[in-house]
Image (cartoon, rainbow, N blue to C red; front, side, top):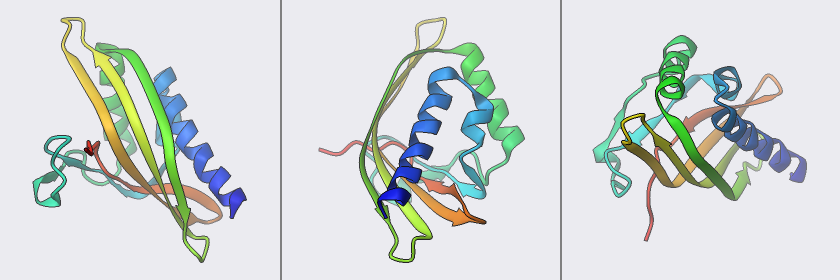
Length: 142
């Protein structure tokens, strides 16, 4: 199982590199075609009744276009991520990673978008390759 955990960590690290280098193609490489990404209304919205689906089902053109716009209009101030837990299913075909993130973007006008808290990234092994199938939005925990 430690090899599988290393594979999951590699995906977490690859996604982080994608944000750090603002490489849309690298970001898109981690997602399963059926990926869905719910976002809480606020980082304190732990009740899924308050969550929303901002991006809908994974669409590389739509998602890539939104990230390209973000990268063109905002400066990445910092992007710190720490994996807290990786768990793999007994069957070895599903996994999750709990990651604490602190990512700060700034617009030319000085407006800040701060993604800070804990996320859960869910993966499935498909045709011998791990792909992200779900990701919670950023939540803060006391």
